[in-house]
Length: 96
Image (cartoon, one colour):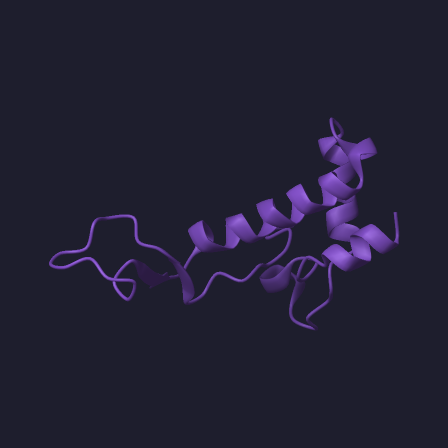
């Protein structure tokens, strides 16, 4: 079943990937973006944080994925839209 899970990916403030036209300022150094390119870093960062706390899982990607999916927060939506739900780092760490 896909998706496996969902992550924040809509209207995410991110560093601009192209040099802004005109004068460079803090306001034009960032841009709101949406999509999997914004959701993926959320999950990657969560997994990096988890592996820094639970180093014994380094090198076991299948176990980490199973833990990730097992500890998602259910959003009470159709599983074909939300998968297992939203990843929950605190639940992953507290229950492993």
